[in-house]
Structures are given as C-alpha cells and as structure tokens.
Image 1 (tube, helix red, strand yellow):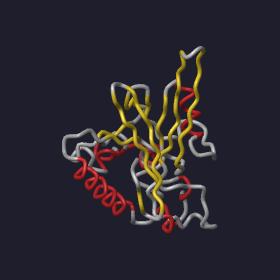
Image 2 (cartoon, one colour):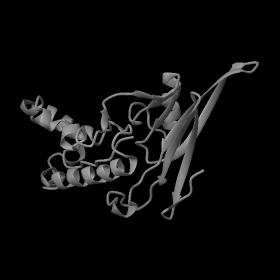
Image 3 (spheres, helix red, strand yellow):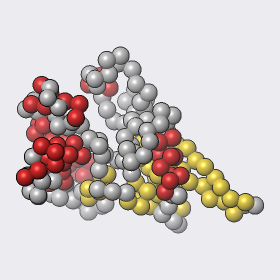
Image 4 (tube, one colour):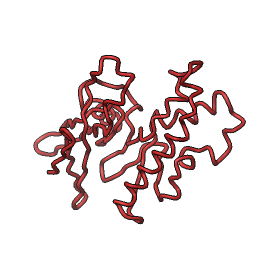
Amino acid sequence: MGDELDAPEPSRWNKGMAGEYAPTLQDSIDLTYNIMADFRAALGRNKPFVIQRSNHTDRIQTYIRKYAPAFGSLDTLKIEELLGYHSLNIQYLHKFKELLPGWVMAHGDEGRSIQTPGSTAMSLAKKLGKSVVCGHTHKLGLQHETTGLYGKNKTIYGMEVGHLMDMKQASYLTSGVANWQQGIGILVEKNRKVIPYTVPIIDGDIKLP
C-alpha cells in the first residue's frame, strides 16, 4: 500500500533544516530494497508483486520537481529505479488500480484522512463506487456500506491495512502515543467474489483467519 520508504530528508517538513542535509537517504533506499527483496523471495520470483505510490515515496520526485527540475527527466532518479523494483520484478503503481473484481488499491492520501479506522478507505470507496483497500493512516480497520432494495443489494468495503512499524523508532511522536495499529489486510478471491480480512498483530504475534 506504499510508505515502504520514509524519505524524510526531502520532505517539506525538513526544508531548510538539518534533516534536509542528512547523508542518510541512500542507506534508507538500500534497506528498503533488502526488505522488498525478502518479500519477493518469500513470494516467489514470478508471482505478481504490486506496490502503490505513496506520499512518502512521492517526496523524492516532488523535491526534484521543485528544486532540481533539470534532473526530472533522468530515468535513474525515478522511484522504481532508485528502489530497484525492476530487478525485483515489482510493479510500482502511480495511480489507482483495480486489484481484484470490485476492489481498488489506493494509498489513502487521495482523499480526506479520517481518524476512525477504516473511514478513510470507506470515504474513497463511496467516491469511486467500488471497495477500496489502502494504507497511509497506519490504522487497521474494515467498514462496509450496503445499498439496494428487496435483496438486490450492493455492498462496498473500505479496508485500511494497519502498519508494520517499530513504534519505538517513531521519534517524531513526542508524546509516544498514536492511534495506530499493527496488522495486515488479506483479500481472498473465489469465483470473482472477494472476502476481506483484517488481521491484527499483537505483541509481535499474528494469527491468520
């Protein structure tokens, strides 16, 4: 769902501050590549592996566009090249994708961010008229809405997949508190019908349905 790379160095929050000049971005890119390589190895070489664009990975291209536009045409500076996704056979999406029948893959920053888990995805789902799975909010939640009459109904879902962060590393949370939940989302397709599951990770343990 995106945000696999934090990239705080070129963010607008660091503009003109020490963090903008920190020599750490390449190390973060290398670490991200290694983590994605582990996921690819677990999945197998030829199975589909799709990653959605995100506001964090967008930071690099936004920075180039604003402050170094002469480099904007260089293919080697495109995010999928920087992260080595072609070599890992990973498809990097720059916009919405209908991932499964009736289900759209988004990042979650394309609309309004809402505090209640699942609500950001549900808001996007209502706009698109299709179920939405997204990240961005760091929340784990599943919502649904049904419309129709006399049994001729349509249900759309909004699913947010939580996060896999080490919260101890989130030094920017000055209070140490955030309404975030570790977890993963699973979509199971059978006969063009899709069943969504949200799976919490509690104290490092995960139990699949």
